[in-house]
Length: 116
Length: 115
Image (cartoon, rainbow over all chains, first blue to last red; front, top):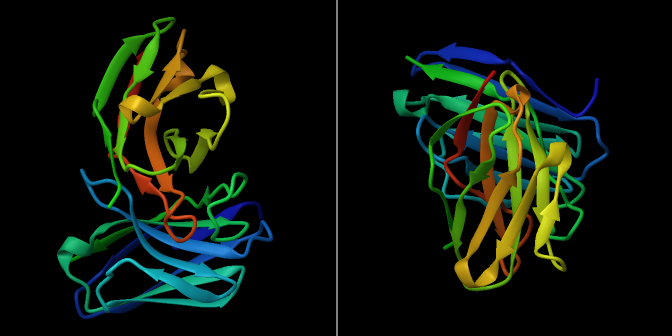
């Protein structure tokens, strides 16, 4: 396995379901991110974790609950979602969460989520 | 708050044509600038980045971008495109004064290169 992986790649869920998205990075990075990409809208940052600690919550509704048990894994727990939450959810990682010159973010392939 | 705008949502051109994609940002302070590319069915990957120094930045696959501070712009160029350049291109900005490595993305430009 290389880079950043995400599972599942596609997910269909009802509004009353509970599901989780998983992200794993194999790059030895310490910072991980969740982004949301909706149709016809720019990529939006949702959460930032640095050394397992959440450092950013970009006003995300509580029906999205992130979890970062270690620097290599990041989860996004979903419950009672709305149809407008249907989107592509991207995970990324970087060496740290600081804005330095070589702190490139590496992205996973995303999970395509559909909420019925 | 910072924002990024990409002027063209879709661009269609023929092989060997020149490509220029516009990107403007709104933030008055020091910024780090990026272009990411997403080829069909693949991950977002970094094409090039600007942090400081020479405002003309060269990236992978023959792409370059020029940072013009007075215009708040970071346009992407390639003098002669190939069919394999068909992809979606995203401009992104990280305001250095902001806490950490938070990227603000533009809406993306879909580029279709006809063989």
